[in-house]
Image (cartoon, rainbow, N blue to C red; front, top):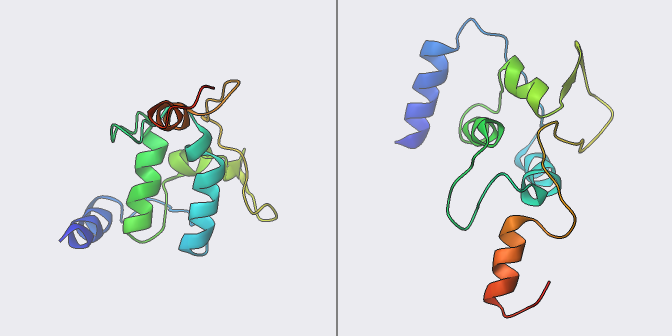
Length: 117
């Protein structure tokens, strides 16, 4: 049902918009996510809150046809000015918020396990 909704959304609203496919498969998407989203302080995975429109766009692409809008592709750093990155496997997200120490989700998990960071 969700896939049908996503396919309808793409076909009805995004038909004329140029779309970008930053990953050739799901593994590449997971690797990029592990380097960026998992290390970012914006998403709160334990609470199920993204707090990031790029994270939402990536999930929509993952469940849909694998494509992103220009805004999302630029936001994740796939498009640099007007050229598309072709040589890097995982590149840094423009919006990633990092701070010294672990990401927020890692800190919460460590606290639950009784570890001091």
